[in-house]
Length: 372
Image 1: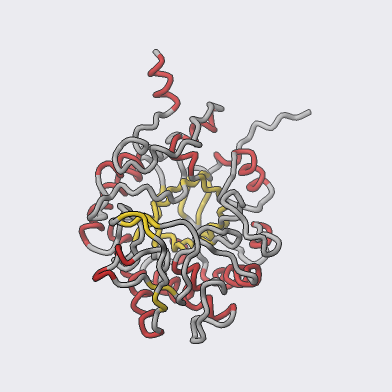
Image 2: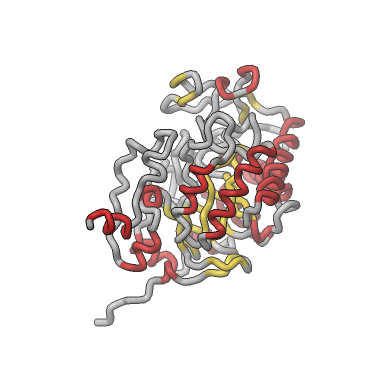
């Protein structure tokens, strides 16, 4: 019997000409260390630089505007102070040999008037309230509100916010950007029939529900070339009260349309670890391979064995790891050497808003040195 020794996750990969040292991706992880100003800081630079054994790092979800905010302490990219704050973070990541994409985020209905200027309601494609757990706001834990449906003539302004955020990201030195179109946030709300009840050009059919994402992609690719722009999708997920009966038709159509741009990748939460809506057969990476010819990134619940198998079977080109990277800053190095992982099931310290549970996790070598 032949024992497999080659580890494909450690292979180099050319991402539309952008050379990655391996196929490990550090997934976007919203950790809330930027404070009230949402300006990236030295603590964040340390955190990301600790994890540069990944071929590609995707930043935490980053707010594209004041209106886009719905999380305490996450970073922004909507003013020049934030842009300048990102520069040393980018430099630290590049010094470690990783490529670095910034994730562009608008939370839509997954926000609250406590975050908004003059306590205005959060916006969404339609006035459909999120049913679920309460939201943590600057004024405490509260119920989600019924959002205000965007007027048709407001939408181009939000598209431009994505363009301007991409411009600042490019000026900060990022290698590219990822458009967050997953997990129940604004673009996902437009894509899904559950949350998009519109009757204008942005709703009412599979094609029209895609229109907003289409405009965002076309705006962002005026700043970065298409091969430096990724899109994140979550066709199977229930996160933030999502899941639509026509999800397969919708998301396979979306992937087919995105294939025409020559994008860097589609980043798909194909795994079911965060819950599945059970509205049909899950959309798989194999399904997406049939309609999208570019690089595919799998995510959600992958261990090393599943990740290797997905790449070996040509269902994925890259695999993004989230929670394991929080407690294992040297995740790829541990895999390369067969070293054990630090447990990542305890989330109690993850959102301390300071160094604890953020930059305090040790590499395996540091753990060994500590035993001496």
